[in-house]
Image (cartoon, rainbow, N blue to C red; front, top):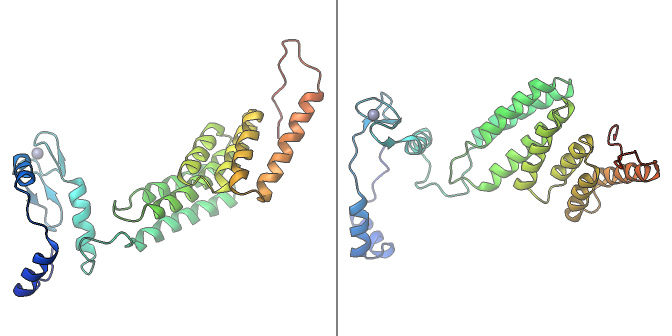
Length: 247
Ligand SMILES: [Zn+2]
């Protein structure tokens, strides 16, 4: 890693006086009691820390885990002009591009009804979206991941994998509750699973956040139609209502 440019000595001293609190001797003792020197070797690029005996990033034998450290080290060495520590509004644009591109590939496969391939692309994109560095605004991860998972839910749905479609829809709601798409996808999956009252609940809940959403209003109307047709049908011998062919 390149060393950050040094401030001129007098300025640095002044700077430190201004912002650094006096060390607390008790806290200092706690930190030192926990301090454990570890053996560390750098790889050929001088960016990755490895355990010396086995050249591993994470080694149970040596009881070291440099994965997070190396992640930070890679980011800093790839971005020599980055302020250190990076402010939370720094966003890895390259990662955004990769996520978006992978998602678009999924969308193209979706449009041509290649559900399984589309699911694969969305899964990749979701993997990239969760790779954001910890200091990057959570908001980006939520935005990107919720869109990708919503699309994957739709692809699972089309592929007849209804439980997976439902799980992704639930995750979308967790990430972005006010967004109607999560509630919409959840309701669609529940309808297809024959869980009509639950679907109605999901839509009504979603409509609280977005009361004029036409897609959701349409689904609610469909659900009410189905529920009315149940009510008009003679009960079966066992007292249950038929649940097939709900869409
Ligand atoms: Zn080791």
